Length: 361
Ligand code: GN1
Ligand code: MG
Image 1 (spheres, protein in one colour):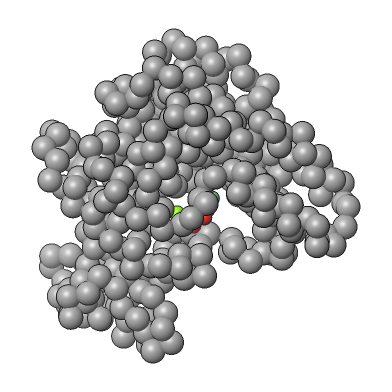
Image 2: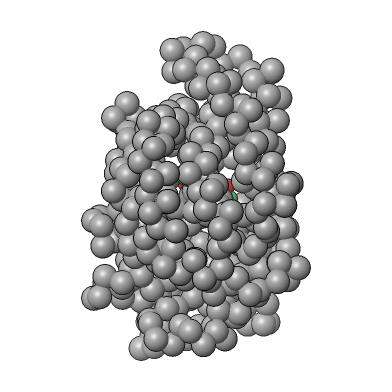
């Protein structure tokens, strides 16, 4: 704690530090809420970046500043309350602080009078989550991708995760419990199809654009008074990519009412009506830049990102939990079963999901 206070005080803000507590449920970085004795900004967010995963954290800060400054300059947001987190600087004017062990810390402004949820609360909330991603995509659609660094090579490139999975399964001795057997079979039955988005990208059907990378439900901030979406946070994975990764991630997260951390993995299912709500307000914004052909891949994107996340969790389980933080040894196995059950449910609703997308074109 002493140490945390000393780190928090590196970042220029008025007032004495009253409290620091862990905040949110991030799977990679460590996030803290700092409370200050101040009349103006009472809180800010302090984060420790996992540099085993984000190997060039300075580039993350650069991308974050590029995107948030671009959005702040954009005229169209003046009609709504829409706030991007501000990067806070140290006393020396730097956007990060290296502690005595060389660990990387950064601070962001806190978005006041807002909250986020791990699962969709009702259809109105679903529409707000979709709207937030659509507005974000729209606001950065005119930011050229050359201005953004690739901060996490291979992120959301499903064939790359399959390659790692093959390497890991070859040397793993995880045994063959019924759950492990189910996962191995699940992956093997979907291998060929798993190239769908990368193939479409290679064929020039889907363009690279600036993307968020992690637009799950709890990264959308909702105004406590109005219930409206006012921000999308967690900008570490902002980089060039396919908007389909984001659409898939937002919908796999939003349409799983039990959430991605449930114990009842066998009961996990996809909710098509929530999918309609999210897509409706997403597309109200995204239709401004999406080409006709891009709609053809939305169903595959939804199915693929659920499958890919299951594959990433399962690989990490087999590898001994080296990537995602876990609370127990089988945590990543359970997480992968949840995503695979969700994928199965998405597959069972293929016709309905394709019709929802078709009706909105
Ligand atoms: C990770 O750390 P967090 O929760 O923001 C992961 C995402 C996954 C997500 C699943 C850099 O995000 O890709 O979708 O867990 N981030 C990275 O909850 O791998
Ligand atoms: Mg994240």
